[in-house]
Image (tube, rainbow, N blue to C red; front, side, top):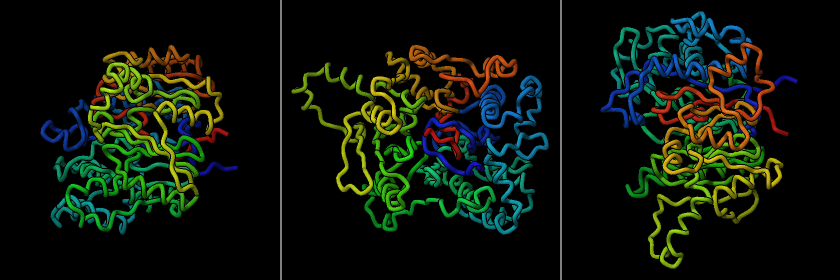
Amino acid sequence: MPQPFLQVSSEVGTLRRLLIHSPDSGLGKVVPSKAQDWLFEDIVHLDTMRRDEYDYYVKLLLYFLDPDKVRGRIASLDADESRDFYKPGHPAYFNSDYVIEFQRLLADILDDELTRTKLVASICAIEHEWYSTQAELLALSAIELAKALISGTTPTGEMLFSPIPNLIFTRDLGITINGYLLLNKPAKPARTREALLAQYIVFNHPLFADVRDRVIELPDNELHFLLPENEKDYNQTTLEGGDVMMVAPNHLLVGVSERTTIYAAQLLIQILFDKGIVDKITVVKIPHKRDYMHIDTVFTQAKRNVWVLLGSLARRDNQKRAEQIDPTMGRLIPPRADEEMKLVQFRRGEAKPREIENLEDLLTEISVEDLGCAPDSVKFVYSGNNEFPYGAREQWTDSCNLLALKEGVVIGYDRNDKTADAFRQAGFQAVRAGELLRQFEANEASPDTLTDTLILLPSAELSRARGGSHCMSMPLLRETLF
């Protein structure tokens, strides 16, 4: 029986198809004065990020999802200074149907004259460009136009509009929920163009032709413009993929965070329940802080029974804080809504939601009730091994933001040493990406037989972008766990 194009019902089922975007030239144009406007904490060295870091991510993904593209070729690919294998539109590009490049899909749809005209006009409108700019862009080939719309720069080097450096975090653009595709609505103006490009790809590329009746778009609040300024933030529709986790076929997690509003979460619950797509949705409200951004920056799943998370938002740290101040005195401290963590679960057909006390209880419940694990088998791996100050330091560099290639095999960053130690203590091996690829090439290891492994991706530059392997992936197809 042929595999569907689109189906994700867990965070850890074997990954079979995903959408990525390799770092493009726009990342090299982020300047200090605009870094925070473009959602970057720092400027990056583009060639290092590509050649010494992200290329390893691509090779790993291909070895697990489309091995014929790379098996037996790693040495020659690493020796090729041109990197043509990694460049969409180049004849030597790997061009996989399983590790799918966003820029390649964009170039494909721009071959159609009507789509090209509409998309260029739309982008020039939102970027406040001259009408003459449209003619300049429309004169480009599909491949060059795709590059220009992403990087903001023409082949001659003219910078027409800002780059969209966050496009490497494809997770935020769309989430597969069982057999449906949710198109997200980024919170920040810097990501508006990304969302528009994703929308055009989904509704115009033949790869998505059979799933368009299963695409979900959240409507805007039609009365948003009438609200007073102090109410607008809470009542707009903004939702990003880092705040949505498909943890089991019947259960979805939705974060309320710096980037996803309560209003958007409410809309999503209503739509998914009305369509009968899931039976259970848990809203995870995390502190409204740049440190966290999305729920996948504070926890992700490694196995059915193993989770990696930030200790300060879990039960253990809460207990430590409670011991520092007497409970009676503690009641005198005024609560701060932006720093509170709340967990509320909704079930289809039930009017009254239930509150869950803490994150560890929720994750244990998912492992036991939704995924069939024994209660005493559930393990938590803490960022920085829950040691001060490494928990917070390593969470900042995405120790909790891991992509599961299969159950028990996850990709993390090599700079998070204490978290790697915590994984080892939980029974995992931690191996550097280059060494694992060498083992694959020497037939000393195989993606099919690999178990309980944290793969350490080079990350000096990638970590500056404030997103890990989970952020840098938009899974379209995973094998079911049951």
